[in-house]
Length: 371
View 1: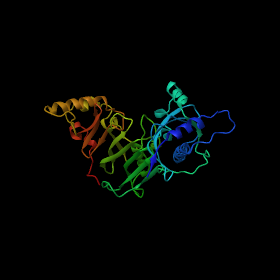
View 2: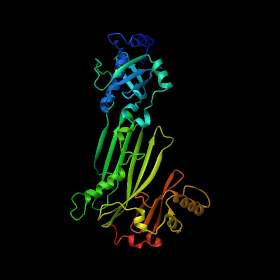
View 3: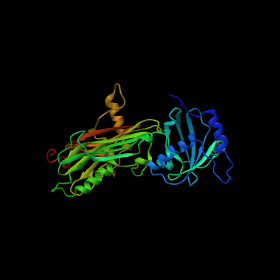
View 4: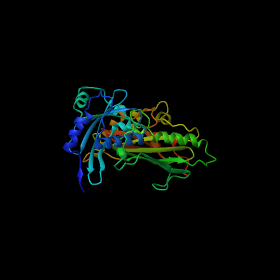
C-alpha cells in the first residue's frame, strides 16, 4: 500500500492555485488534498457545534505534517496542526497527531490577537480558504471521521459500595478527537426516601461539589483538550444528622508542567441541606492556629522522608495553617469521631485527622454508628 503526504507537484499546485488573484471573480478550485483537509476541519466544527466563519491559512507542508492558522470573525487567531497521510491506491486520507484548539472555543487558553508571528504565518501561507460548518466544499469525505464527544451520566453498579440510602453515579465525558476525558464518581441519596427532609437540595449540593470548573469558571469539559480528569470521593460520614465527603481529584494535561492532585471536603447538615463551614464546627472563638497547635492531629502522609519524621510532620502541619480557611466549606470533613483537615505541603496535598474529643468538640461526634 502506498502512503504519501504532500508531493512536490501538489505543493506547486498549491502555490499557483491557492495563491490566485483574490480580486478574480471566480474562486480558484482547491486541490483535492486541501479540500479533504478542509472537510476534516469542517467535520470537527460540526461535531463540536462551533459557529462562525474562519479564514484558514495553510503553511508550506513539512512531510505529512501540516500547520494551519485559523482566523475567526472577531479577528482572533488559532494555531492548529495535524499529520495527513494519503493512500494513493485507495485515494484515502488518514489524519493523526491532532492539535485543534479551535474546537474547544476556549479563547482564554488558545486564541491570540494579531501580532508579528501571525502576520508572518499569513505572509508565508501557500493557501487560504473560508470555512464554516455550513460551507459547501463540493466533495465527499475520503477519510475516517473520529467520533464526536460522548456523555454518560447515570447510576452504576461498579466501584465501591455506597452507604445505606445512597447510590453512586458515574459521569463520563469522552472527546476522542480532542484527546480529553473526564470521569466523575459521585454519591446521591435515593429519591424515594420518604423520611428525608430535602433529598433534591442535598443531591444538588453534592453535585455542585464535584462538577466545578477551574479558575472560578463553570465545569465545561467541552472547553478542554489533551488531558484527563478523575474525581471520586470517600464517604467519611453518613448518618441521620450529617453527610461528610472527602473528594479527590487527579488531572493531567499535556500543556501543564506536571500532573495535579488535591482534596476538597464537603459536610452537609441533612436537616437544612446547607453545607457547613469550619467556623460552624469550631464556633465563633475557634481558630485554625489553635487547632493545629493542639498536637492532636496526625497526617495521612508525611511528604519528607527519612529520620526525624515527628519533626517533619510538625512542620508539615504548621505549613498547612496558610491554606485552611475558617469560612470555607472545602477545607475539612468529619468522621464519626474525628475532624479531618485538608492541607498542602508545597504543591503536595495531604489530610490530617484528630479525635473530636481531643479538640473539645464532642458534640459533633455521631450519636450512633453509621446506619
